[in-house]
Amino acid sequence: MKRLLSSITDGKGFDILLVAFPLGYLFLMSGLPLLYNVLMSFQEVDMFSRGSFWRPFVGLKNYRDLFAMPETLPILYNTGIFVVASIAGQFLLGFGLALFFWTNFPGATWLRGLFLVSWVMPGLVVGAIWNWILSGDFGVLNFLLRETGIIDGNIFWRSDPDFSLWAVIIANIWLGMAFNMILLSVGLSAIPKDLYEAAELDGANAFQRFWTITLPMMRSTIGAIISLGLIFTLQQFDLFAAITSGGPNNSSNVTQYWAWDLSFRQYDFAKGATISVIMIIFVMFASVVYVRSTRHEVRG
Image: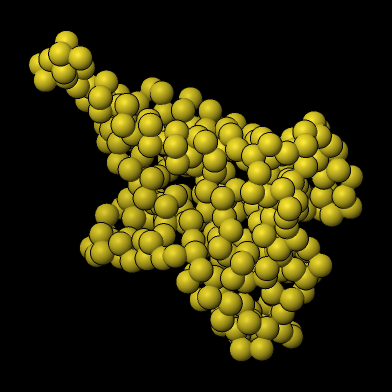
């Protein structure tokens, strides 16, 4: 014990001590619940056995029963559309804003800061705001679309099965657009100006400079943003709870909201845990992409 204490006080074991505490905290607060969730996906869990740790082991029965349910494939399809459309919209709009503010015109700094309001707002607050914007009777979005001649009558975004999922997608794009803009702005500022000056002297136009310099130099940043966007989008729950509640008739339901609905509304904890395990696989894939995208970063 004396040798252990001396190793900490003289600095040799201090770095290990610093790492041990956060790792222990993560294991207790995140690791154990994650393992418990995986265990529940292989057990038979109901309201009567919820308080017990040792429950009947059913193997892959929960997974087979889940994919045998008629709503599983439509909900997985909705999740795919939600993830792809949200990431694409957030990235394209965020990249456009990053390029716009990259010109560094007067007032660009404070104007860019205003876009961060969407990112710091809680998801339920964003959902409440977009509830008003997407209202079929008095919503601002319908008003703008009517005035521009795009639509003739009102669209009931939240209650129409053809538009309910897109209502949440629009809100989620607005929510994550500022995050993409900030990270892409950091990536753009790291590109040396000399490259653009040399390319311009060689006669390259704006599109050629963007295609041959900007995109290749930001490859790691783009990979990190897309992988983080996948993680954040798969975790998105508040907007569905605030705007559509997965309806009507599961037309806007996705896996993350369905897992909560099965567990805490229908009390089918085993299937809710099963959906969570499937989502964990996709999140782990995104995490691997993120680590590989940032492994070439130089840290001082």
